[in-house]
Image (cartoon, rainbow, N blue to C red):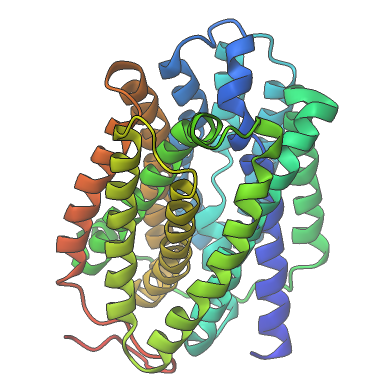
Length: 397
């Protein structure tokens, strides 16, 4: 990478990290905290509070992506971060679960993912783009790991209102990074690409389905996981970081060799399919685990580790490929569609996870995830091979 590429990639990954830390901080503790709020006895409402962020993200990603193609990436990113901060402060002052849902909805309206990933794609050469996208994936993973450690401690120290307030402050700090640290955005490509062209692209459709399933599974899993760790491992909520932190660290160590080697040797498709298959095995394993009356304490550790290895590989691979396959003048629109499906996955994961827990039991969450992963594996098997590093276009398999 050149110095400019490194600066753009690291600073934009930092923006993602600050924003995603603010989002992830509530995940480990919210499902337990919500029981103390009016309306918190409904698993369906708890799932909605976790997932509504994804619904409003889904509504905003395509408009924000198209706007970034026309009016500039940085301007759109700042507007989105301001909305996220506003929603955070609304949730911080909420006195019922319904108002938390409203605040989360406003948070999600700041849909900047497409604009940020498009700016990274604009600022890096194609052969360096997977590295840059991997930095984004790593920043998300680091934020997630940090949230799992910090969230129970912060919850004890400042409460849920304080955590939401902190998310707003982090969003405002991210604006400073955009304006002061991120290099000037390159000139936007000339011309326009219709949204219909983007939506009709079969290769992009495969990736859009994939990111929907990936984030549905992730969000649904964390409707169930806090209570599962308490029941199986007898760990109080404040000590869950002892599980999550080593799992996240080892998952990064394990995911990097196959990701980088697969791309370098032109076997990225095989690594990609292997990660989907691993995700499927985790869903089946969790379903089996929760179907047993006395599961072993070690089983959640192994399954969480395998989940995050698969998740990190897929999270780094997919946006890089979208940016390669999208028309240059429609990059923001294509990433907007991609992030819309990601956000819908977050919403559906939270909402469906809550509904299934309430009416069918926790094991049903993972049975649904397994069915969706089987569909993803079938769809992805016919995709074009991911281009090896330095290739201009993907070669057909």
